[in-house]
Image 1: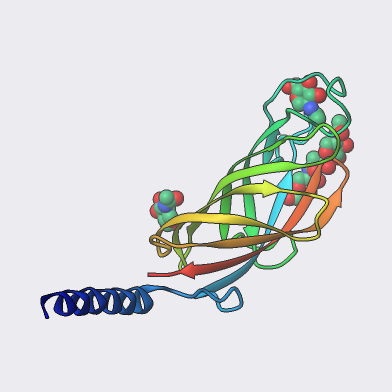
Image 2: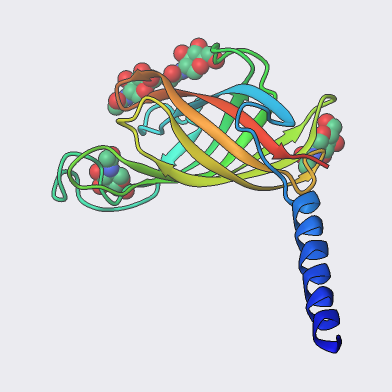
Length: 183
Ligand SMILES: *[C@@H]1O[C@H](CO)[C@@H](O)[C@H](O)[C@H]1NC(C)=O
Ligand SMILES: *[C@@H]1O[C@H](CO)[C@@H](O)[C@H](O)[C@H]1NC(C)=O
Ligand SMILES: *[C@@H]1O[C@H](CO)[C@@H](O)[C@H](O)[C@H]1NC(C)=O
Ligand SMILES: *[C@@H]1O[C@H](CO)[C@@H](O)[C@H](O)[C@H]1NC(C)=O
């Protein structure tokens, strides 16, 4: 009698625990972000003569080409304008502030860490982004690891695709920002 009561109790606890685990587990659908923004990132690399317009600068010092042809070791610091469309001259809706570095000797491959700083009537706050930019892939996903202000505690994924490349001096990325945690 005692024993069956004991087993019943155990069973009851297991059922109760699995019930709470089920109602607390969030299933995230990649197709259904709680917020989505498509923005364009413009990067104009400083080349000694374009200081008025440059928005990024190579701050590293590996000698050109000694480590291969893919900028391995080059670190670029940027304060890049972010627009809603592809036009560099459009009103910028945010700044992207941070850095990228080239991290492969055998092909172009980069790593980004930056903050999207919003300060407009539409949004005020930041999104912090980091991850690998595997340039040869048509699209690549980087993590949105946190946010502040209007993006308080946000998390999500930003999908990069290269939208334009003009020599070494300019490139444009399409950033498809999908947040899966919004507060
Ligand atoms: C630097 O960039 C500017 C603007 O794109 C270009 O006109 C100029 O020729 C470039 N200078 C060098 C040294 O590449
Ligand atoms: C800088 O941008 C302005 C337009 O804002 C353009 O007229 C000028 O030619 C650019 N200068 C360089 C060096 O690219
Ligand atoms: C980056 O800048 C350094 C000098 O600071 C230069 O030696 C190097 O060639 C530059 N790298 C590229 C890929 O332009
Ligand atoms: C945001 O914009 C306002 C108004 O233009 C300005 O006063 C404020 O300093 C800006 N804040 C930041 C953090 O840039």
